[in-house]
Image (cartoon, helix red, strand yellow):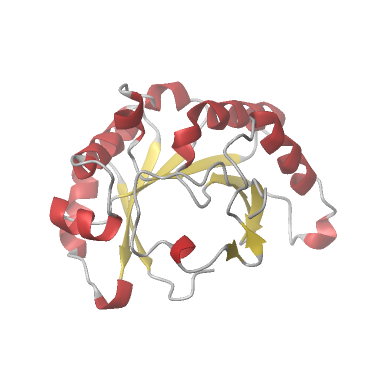
Length: 213
């Protein structure tokens, strides 16, 4: 366990807000390991505030460039849990980043369940803060999605599609992603791409990484 709220990967800053998730994806790397390239992401608790995140963010962002190839240009809300489950913290941190580092692109990697969780469409609240959403579609049918994502409520797949459409309707760049090749499982990628396009999203295939990062 640790309190790594901010970490780096492939030249980007990542923000790890929570351990909690409304899915239990069978391919999730946290089922097999506790770290991403040596950075332990299981949090000690769920009590971290926006100020805690910002403090770690500033430390990493302003580290000497001798540790990084170039200045950071993208920040991604993505950790071991679903970042939108700490919506208030995410929003406050995104506001800080946009104000302090306006040239920084902000992306949220999400399972698309937030509107179900909060019982309202939260996407418009993020329109000027988030540049891109990457939403886990993970299937061309409800059964396929449920097998891979193991959601904790019944209509999760429909909620994911509604969330993708809400992002598109709000004018926020959105990508629908799928994990392909998990232990020999193969999705109907053409069908997944068609769904993404019909919802107004780009489509991305993420090949399953056997040992994670």
